Amino acid sequence: MAGCDKPLPNEEQISRILEKLKKEPVGVGPDGEPYMLLVFKLLMSVIPGQDGILHWFCQKTRPVVVEAATFLLRLHAFKSDSVNIWRGKLTGVLHGCCDCIEGYAEAKSCSKETYVRVFLNIRPG
Image (cartoon, rainbow, N blue to C red; front, side):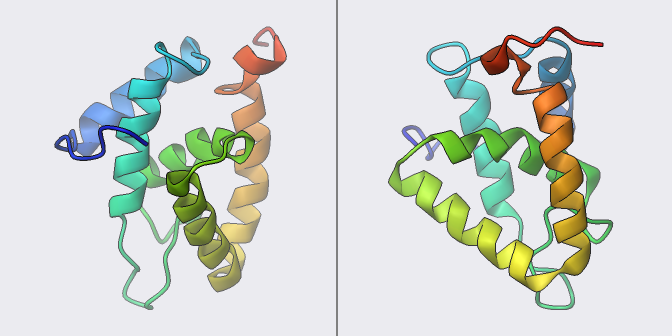
């Protein structure tokens, strides 16, 4: 993803961005790219927990990380070196933690109802 050298906003700012995107989803392109980049940078900055395992979808990580990982499930539709890095880390998350597997399943459903509905032309509620 281009522009990965910009500083990372704090987690509170990203939480607010993700909350806004739940209410007003954006697609890809000029409207969505800046948000994806910020959230991507946050998720890539997450380090393994005390157990040595990377957690994105369970109670062993912060809520903003779960939300960021949920938002970025849309990356399954893309191909790039950055997306390959994300896929590799996602594979590690799912291979390392049973709770993250369960959270991932929930996140896929949540993502479809919130962040991805703009792609699927789904109306909320």
